[in-house]
Image (cartoon, rainbow, N blue to C red; front, side, top):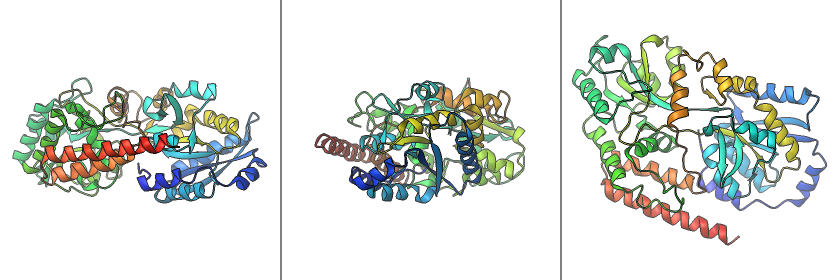
Length: 437
């Protein structure tokens, strides 16, 4: 779920609109459009994209011939930046959902207008549709979500209730479970000693994980990253009394030795190796468990805890969008609509959550009774999108630093106030920059 850096997007902002010669050359080839995908190195996903394009190009109703150019995810955004500088962006690009508002405000991508495509987007998970300012810019095939993972045998042995979709743990139950696991110090069934009761991925600071995974916990307390009534300030939400309570709680998980300041680099493998009792992670952990022959029937997949204002989970993954410079938007959107058939959504999903109900029903993992069926219910009921604002990348980076400082012992109230000051200054600067164009 890597995101374009702020610097990268600023570069994009400064380069849109040049290269008239290239645009004219592109118009001459408007019966051929190109799709840039970030899936190079992810063979299953890339093969699925290739099959979709092959089928579209063979269809009698195609509006243009689609070509694929695949990039490794690690270099994808750099490739977009370089192409934007040379005005050589293709018609169709992958874009990570939280970046859509910034890319839209920068004029890199344009709103979708095809009625059939927009109608189809309404049938997808809301977290698979990228919006900004009431317009739809991107659609995706899959999503991810997070949950709590534990061994049923451990919960039973320690007298801990297994949380269910209908009855998640509240804060008291979560802390009681952690207390019992800490007192045990080991898996009471196998006798394997635990390093800590819990791992929430604290080793992953510096990327998107902290915002993706920890802001839902902040929201469950009653705080948020930004005031969603106007998206103009974080004042009173990120430094509210509820947010301070959340910060103190995060800090206490470390000081009370429920989790490490810096946990394992691979939390799924840590859980598989029985080094922790409780794991907060995403559905991708399932693959690690299967690869290591873990008895899935002993695994409890439980919704995020209700920390006061109900359980909250994250959403938003990679989507496809049409660039502003596309010379054949009719064909680009026609391809996107074609690609959203349920069979293609299913082929793109792997262990991720398929974006349509019909595709979920065909998925061995997510259909009723499937090993990950509860993950689909968690996403549909508890998802809260990351703030749809051009300032999100800055907010995410600031939140990551803030939480890292807090779990390392910084003063909670002061640290949150500093984050609010920085975020509000960025929002004001972004608005001034936009209004001056």
